[in-house]
Length: 280
Length: 297
Image (tube, rainbow over all chains, first blue to last red):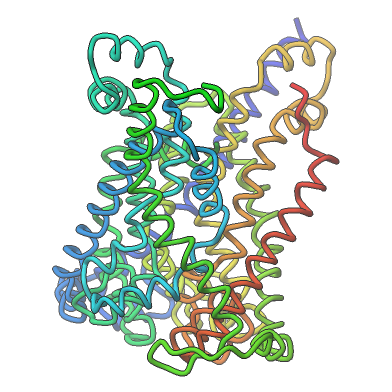
């Protein structure tokens, strides 16, 4: 009996220790965000106070107005939104089609063509950037939404990922639809595609998050401030405002807000979606 | 369908649909990726004369590159960044994953908080860290009474970047590792408990070997991403910062060579070198994994 009581006590200690470490970790993880919000509401002199104040003594919502003046946020939101939208549409539509074909259809050259997909996946995206930029420049399409979308018109990763999904769907389902008179396209579009909802959601989230955070391509291809994305626009502030941190924090907050709100609404889909695209 | 036999009508139709359905992707990959890859390879043997004109100069770009201290420094910076971030990051992620795998309340909230940096643009996140690391007014120096120039001192700037990188990726790696931990059957631990094995023994005898395949995947992924690091270093240290040479990664150097200095030939050589580096490290990892990754489950 004594033994089980001490076992119980040690189990309790473990649980408490687990909580303590997790809470400490969570504080470290969340602190930069809290500090960003608090700083964005302070006046400049207060932000530089020694020792620092934690909560702002006088609220300065005007910092957000100043941030909006130093960057064309409306355009940045619109550009980023459109880039993400078109990249997601392209990735989902083309990758679903190709993923289905690679998983379920027989055609000559299939292995060779799938090899191209694998080659693209194994190379870092920077290896394509110079020629991609030259193509966009030659077409006279630098500083456009199209330029932002360009490298994301097709997604080798999406094809690979959705092929896995389609391989997991029993072929009999497709055969049944085929016998009912559907052609290959109808079988894909009406029967198989609707079964891939979870994976399509995962691919959507994955594509959106990475397009949103991408920095090098938008910096290279769109140099006009009005055609930048939130990420590349924010990068232009980086040498300036070295003393006006409240405005910088307000700008950073504005830049990350849309995705953070989406994340807080769709937490489970985000975490499981991104995890499912990474772990396999 | 054997070779030589004529395809039936249905099989031919299937084949046509197959080609049609992969066509957009394949055309896209050829134009956007395969052809650019060949071009970059070729460009690395050329001098850029401006306006998209190139002159073939053989291996000159590589010869010049290997003689530049800046290039070797960038290569070392990249490797140093990996050394600083990957082991510590993996250790902390595994720790978080194990804690989240315990029987506790509020698991979802912790997971949401740890994962949050993943959905924030690196540009925005780094901006906040620059403020935290600020030498005069930054909260870090103020709180601990330090006087470290985190962002401008060439000796510590890489550590500052590593902290941001680890902080950014911990939640993501932990979620992947958690999935690996959840696949371990409870019966192993029950058996170990009956045998009286301590928690530490259980960790080294059960948890670590059983999670090692997941750990390996996460490590490879993290290593690949770290070799290609660009955005957070670029945001942390601007080109005019005197500490830039002590922290710039290969991809940062690539960006500056190709798009700031405009020498696309040497830029291409840097990126080809990076691919070779990735290839070498991958091969080493796959040979090394036999020593510690356990696949017989």
